[in-house]
Image (cartoon, rainbow, N blue to C red; front, top):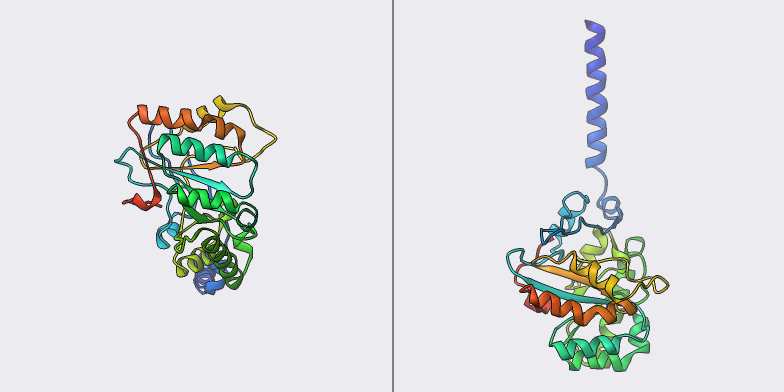
Length: 264
């Protein structure tokens, strides 16, 4: 009996020490835990989910966007523009014809090489967001480097387009940690993730417009934030059909500035 009591006391002591050690970890250690954004896709218009991904409390803490209002048939179209592959002007043509707003998240490479396309985005009423200057893994760089990456994009975009405000950020490759969320929020950014996406960034794996159309339409849901990569030929050729079909289902395309409910 005495031996069993000693064993239980030892177990309690070990658990207490372990719990104290975890709780006593410095903020810098917690801030270094990296996450790769992922989500459970929508099926038949139901809500997608990040409940099992482990990072939802962090996104809530720092006011990040995963989806909009689940009760409204609104869609928010976003493009990642790491570099130009010859399709953005056609994408802009479709958006202009269909009167659909979008946001383009740009890197430093894009800012330096595609001034005229940036000016056109601004002139036609689209938002330009921050995708960092060098497209680094944001979880692996210091707070100072994060500030440099984001400030340079904002400054250079303003010089090219006159857009003075840049409130939206998309972290490169969807990799983040608490430090990157905290620093970017301190700079005035809202981190924008996504709730509709597919493997569209591989320019060597393009399968035709119908592939892009099917992948996107299968995931549509109220309040969806659509992520499309502008380097994709499939996306470019499917965009008009996606917009038309979504509208036929009762969806309305809106700008991120019009998002009234922001859910992580």
